[in-house]
Length: 260
Image (cartoon, rainbow, N blue to C red; front, side):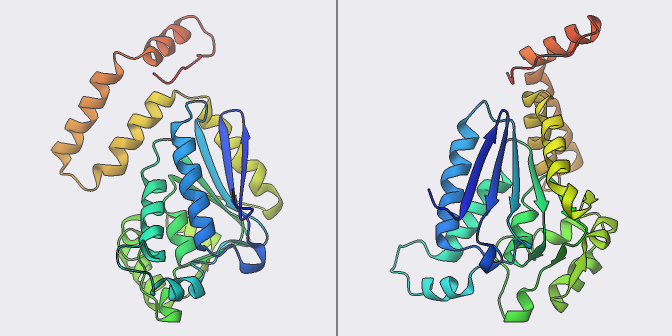
């Protein structure tokens, strides 16, 4: 496994840490390959209930390694190039069935912002600067910058970030709804870990089904989204977790969820 992605598993929480601090954790092919492998393995591991994504140094991720983007344009016919692999891996993270928390420990730009918005919940350090920045380098976003960012923040805010290439503070992005929590720099890691453990105590089956419906509701009509919710509810009514939750409530004890 590449040293550019640190993997730590502590009980039900898996932490993936981008580890290219000298390059501001810019995404390269080695990092994409490591993410690809880890996401598949963690998705298949029933012991893992929450995924936490962060970075080392002063950046969460400054985007793609543009040198590798240029080099990959010479890929042979049929060979997966950098942008194709990035789009596939980001989609893998976006569709990850378990809760994903992104802890933005610093600069988050371009492909780094696109990586962050694959998460379900975003926490940020007070010093973090967040923006799109593709326009600064004549680069077009390919992993959700133009397609998904306007679904997460007001359209005029998304357009401002996309067209100007400027960055905003974590506090500003919290006001616009992209960031859920802002913490002092030296408290971010502990806050993210605490939140991850809170989620890990809940029913994996409930969180998985909630995420499946919520993630796709914007692409459906209201009636279709409600139907999807009802289908998931009917399936959940046959689960161990709902019976355990109800028993635990009546017996005034903490539930022991199994995820099925």
